[in-house]
Length: 392
Image (cartoon, rainbow, N blue to C red; front, side, top):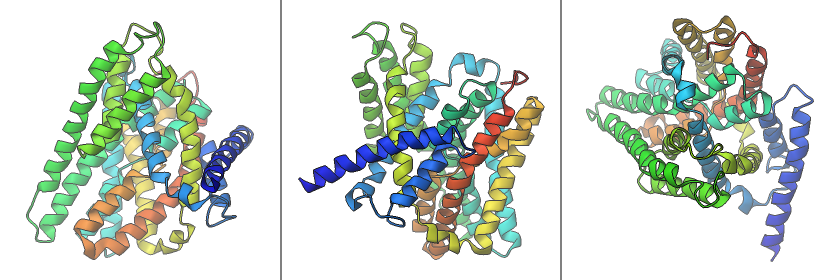
């Protein structure tokens, strides 16, 4: 009974105080993501310790559900209309932003004396971004500008590049360490194609059936149900549930033409999950890890920030986007969370000799990018907004 009362009190307080935080975000320079993270730190184990331990231990489940919904919503923005004039731009900018982050991190670390295999692994991890934070900032700041739509489309395909680059990087590092296997490239390709096929297999029927029970509007139950089934099957088959959810969302967004708002139901609940997600993320952050950044961590942060900025700028320039888009797109891609830590755990398990440095650098830098990245994204979305952004 006590556990139930603690759970209800905690979730109720988080939701109500989260609303206050949302109001504060509209009146300050800080985005909602950063304020929610700070709020989570304040009431978490490193602050007032007001969140019950069993609640923090459920963070992984909340994170998975939130990322599933974010993937579904991002996929829904990849419609034929959004890709009609910008498909090449989206792929080019996202690829160059990922590649330049990898190359700049690896180069700086090698120059600092880090072994090449470790530098490559950290470079591959640096290529990923945080779709949840970026989506929340965009939705809270200016979701309908051309810049925001281009940014969300870029973020939607970013994890595909990150997964591919990581697979290649793991294989290259294995060769350098005397392990001649190329299994990680094969695994990455299988995971991506498997995720895509799962998204298509679920998205096709869902697009035809959604909204049929109540004409004109999909039901909340069917919307959350299809997303949950997608995530559960992807996890069971060791696929990327984020990619599967994106593909499924894109298919429904493009094929479900018998009603106007196929994502209305999810959009009504996604905010709740994101609010709890960021508060628990803040409570789970280990601020002491920042003290472990050191020279390698500092170069990693510098290389990733510089690589994302230069890569996005170069991609925008090659794609012929407006100057404002070139100027601000790189800053908008700074948030990094979730996926990099997962990749670091995979790499550290395969190469235990790098485990301590890998995990300390990635965890510490993730905390930093978690706090600062959303601020830069909000600044970019605000500054880039304007009628001149017809390039997206």
